[in-house]
Length: 355
Image (cartoon, rainbow, N blue to C red):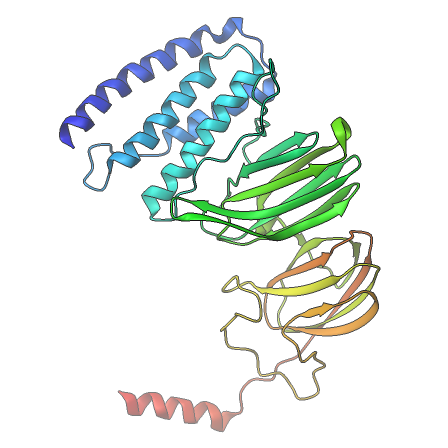
């Protein structure tokens, strides 16, 4: 291991020398400013890694991933065509994600399968230069490696698709331990614009477009859940959406009208799980508080008017399969009275007896 680390360090020194020289020679290479900035941002992220390659916790696999990151940055810094820069950034980001997973003990995602290249054409890419944004065009299936702003936490997916034909997005968990493809997040025809909740486990998105031809274009942005739109006391919208609720105990009134299946779910802001799995202590709701007996609102189609309790700050995940439905949400705060004095004294007494 020591000999491997020494040889790695020697190669690392040469690598950084080449990167520095090539970046200085880039004055003759014309790239759009945003792409050149993406290369700089990637280099700054690399500098913040603070990896001690001779440390006791660094494995050969970690060193291999680190070398892959450095080599990708070297390629990005010396490339003379935008396609080559994007390819290097995409490879570097993938290696960075694997490196972070190995260092933090999370499942390590395997490489995504790139779209097939047509004869005589360069490799199709989903990289855009912007770290958390991927895009594509035309028909076919593409696996997109998920680059999370907050690794190990749920995220927000912003998906846009234009053009005709079928459009489908599924989540995948594809790691060294195995591969699993989940049910479709989105399955629709024509255009789509919406936001969806992205759970913790998936490592890839499987994007499929069919019968749309070259007119079909799509993009996916991954953002932290905190970037969700804030729920206002009266909130109107349509289609798929994720809203952030910042208030205390309240009753949410939901009015829906759609021709497709729809669902409204509450995600606890404390444990970041849906209400059916949440084990956080609920408020002492007054008996008169309206409620729906189910953990979430999941119904067929048509018009509906329902109530759902919001125990604390969290997120509302609104799903409308067709994307053409309208919804109207209102929130009414609920005054939770403090515990009665005898109950408080009783709890303090039990605590004293334990001591």
